[in-house]
Image (cartoon, rainbow, N blue to C red; front, side):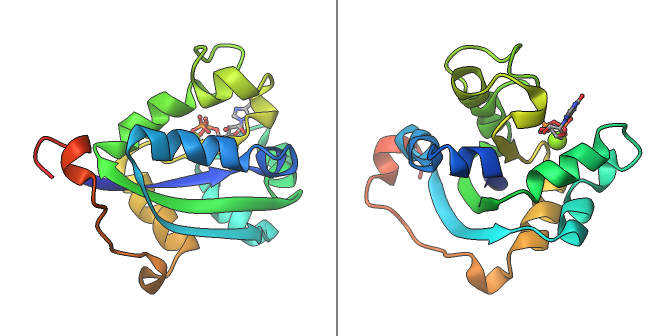
Length: 152
Ligand code: IDP
Ligand code: MG
């Protein structure tokens, strides 16, 4: 089933000039970027995005981290892509992320784990709507879709 996931390169990823490398992984996998924008998140947006963690002891540090510089927010489309992208991203604590995952290859600390990706269809829907108007999501087809999918 085709899905859309919300993926965000965090300020450390952008400032470490890793954006291209990370985007490349999604493109090489065969996924499709259907929306993208760079922004510096306001506190309010950060608190809404991470509302589920508002009672956690790390919440203040998390909001400071995510608002500390530009993020690259994206919507990525593909078959079953929500769980697929979570696998590509790796475990929340990069010390436990498998090698070959984005966090496992580029990060060390949980509080500097460089990327966010939606964890369920419900989160994806909420997060995409928080960052993008529906008019900002680009519907288009790619010429190689039959090479990526058995049934495009
Ligand atoms: P996820 O990003 O893998 O979905 P969540 O548990 O949803 O992980 O946590 C959201 C973000 O909060 C993490 O990506 C990380 O940046 C931060 N975070 C989670 N747990 C901790 C912690 O114990 N210390 C510091 N930051 C944390
Ligand atoms: Mg999460």
